[in-house]
Length: 167
Image (cartoon, rainbow, N blue to C red; front, side):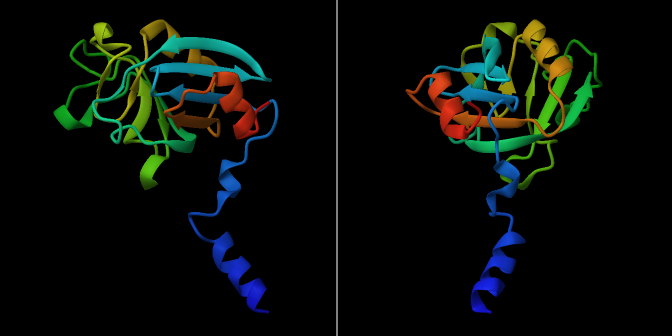
């Protein structure tokens, strides 16, 4: 009885890993903060590889396995009240939000930038900036529920995908 109670309590916990399961062949986005690179794998094949920008400090961009929960075209930038599509909007043309740190996909995301020279640098407040063309391609192919692995590692993308269960 005690074991059942513990299992029941853990299964309802936000720390239970059921939602983080990745099966071989599942699409997955992997970001390596050490190299500021992103790959998107689908059916075990790399479909996109690009440089990205991540957090100004290592702790700003969260690490772990997350889930895409929100997608938006021409996202509105709430912090500074800048409408989507406005050239001043730092989010660019697309938003792919994920559920890091208990958020609902509206705080952390993959997005474009109005500062393309920042790609490859450590400059964001925690999000991952992509070049416009790469972001728009990724946006068209990635659906809600896709897993995102963010790490700081010396391992290859193939090793990271294998360890996550995607290969």
